[in-house]
Image 1 (cartoon, rainbow, N blue to C red):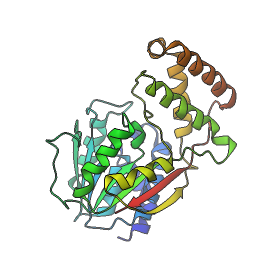
Image 2 (image 1 turned 180 degrees about the vertical axis):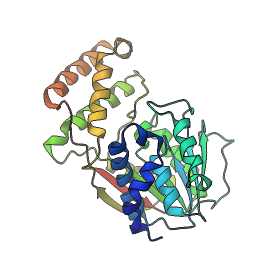
Image 3 (image 1 turned 60 degrees about the vertical axis):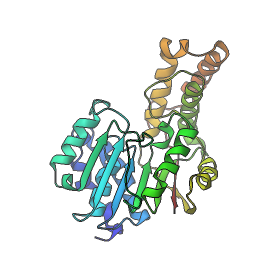
Image 4 (image 1 turned 135 degrees about the vertical axis):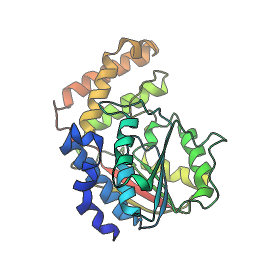
Length: 284
């Protein structure tokens, strides 16, 4: 299969996901986004891929389609299989594993690649993939150590994340929601959301050389179909309404978060908040 064929296969890949039973249109949009990314990365049949931060397997399914019957995807996540709603990680993995893509995938939940027991042979993989998972790291130091740890295991890094530069005013709600959540996390109020350590594209590019990777391409990624702007606005407002999360903050930070939440309510739409753009980096 030619990698450029992947986007056309998005409907069948999305149907393999357990979340498609709850929100088929959302799942299809998320799958199309990831299919375009993998097509751009040129991951070919027969490839061996290590995916970090696989979550419910949105990218895992696309990677499994790309590598074909002769390839292999090892999908790793630190979370427990019981994590996630309305579909848990374990439920989603079980659905994928039972389908036609299942024989190409090995899920490893509750696995931290920084743990000395998590070891792969040097050169075991053609690609290591991090897709919209790096803001979930507890710190930039943890991300740096992870990138350095996996460097001997793969010849190529494929990375994508949201771009903090909003570009247009209709992305400001998503940006503000992300920054407030990151601020709360940095100040010691920890939650279970997707945003813990937001950082810029430029920060990632500065980080890579010290981990043994050399970037060879960086490109913007269209996110027009994605719903993540709405999700992060909701997560931020939930944080601002949580007495437990607010109580963990020093008084000046608490008041700053509450004021920023007021601004977010003023600028955000009830739904249809445009997602930030994303960027893709490949490195060797």
